[in-house]
Length: 292
Image (cartoon, rainbow, N blue to C red):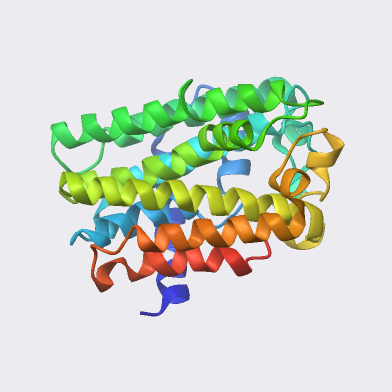
């Protein structure tokens, strides 16, 4: 398995699908569409779409058959980044090496571009080439992860935790919603679309939860040790916003150990799968050495 080659191919397939869906969408205002495109097509790992496809592969499907669902996840992720960067949230000036959306188009346009991407995502899900039952199941999974029980709820906890010394358990809950929930939905959605059984879905859910934890810890470490040029945004933003992180609670060494444990747990969760899950195994290992 050529991990990087597969990842790159699926990133490119996702990019193409995103372009097509954005072009197919009808907007009453051209500036709104440009604002959506500015953030949606700004690059990035396309991690959530790639995870959806890899989960489908792991249970015997072909993940590339589900590009619309994969693209929908990336739209939701991008909307969350636009809103996360706003002055009322993290107040960041740069994202992926470019000025944040509100710095280019203004706060009102950025908010509305995020809203439009979120709703376009669910429209895109309805176009998936599968059964109505699977579309409903995947839509329910993703909506739950994106809403008050997941990403939005985690963002509220994140805002409330500023200038507070929260516990490790509270931090895990916060990021389990803000970051982890959409990772889990990506993996579970790919499994559902590829006809996974209950035991397979449970195992993939455990993998995804540990993947999300490892990803967030690594992100916290990079916020301290990374280069703004490499990660595409200013380092030290967590400290600037007075946020508790895995590094601030555990030390850098302690955070690295916690990330390693999560990576090992994620890989162990895949014991029931054969080599079709090797991409998922390599994906979580890749986190440990990533620089952005």
